Image (cartoon, rainbow over all chains, first blue to last red; front, side, top):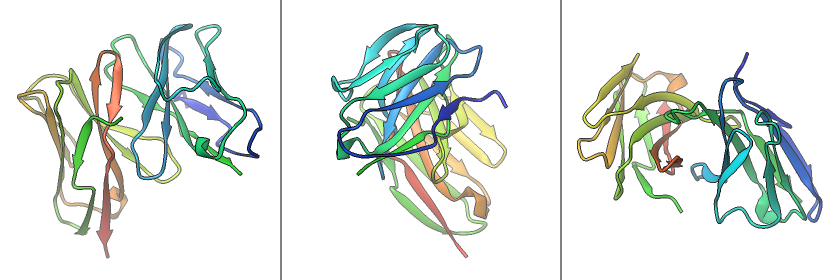
Length: 113
Length: 109
């Protein structure tokens, strides 16, 4: 299967700890997106990359959040000093340069205790 | 915040019934997308619409891109139990894809 892959699927952490999630996009896709989804809501845009360049960041992405895509392939999303409000599903998606369709991974469900 | 309004928020139907849901916005979008999400999974793309007025089918699903480019609807014919889930519309503008809050479909036994 060559779809979008996210790791881990679930993460439970204590408040104040740092967490890092990984996303492997579809191999020929240049664009990679991170979204956050809370219960009862649709996915909310966080940031996106065109190859290794981070082109836009939402105001939802506080300074505790950092995303990287160092070689234009996989990406990581790190949350420092986690807070209970960070509990959510973090979704990664990729698309080709036409950006007409997003393909999502299965997400990482984060629970901050 | 979310800029797409989906309705209804939830639907309870009998198996075999047809379903209709829609999505509206005050802004114009270049592309409309419809996704389905099952619990604990990421959204799965159902239909993509690229031109105003376009009507596209995918099996029992039919979706249309509104003429004004500010709305879209999704129809599901002859619903079956595996249609249960949350349906999201999404619009593409300025390299960002924005999602509605979803329509939750329940099928009564």
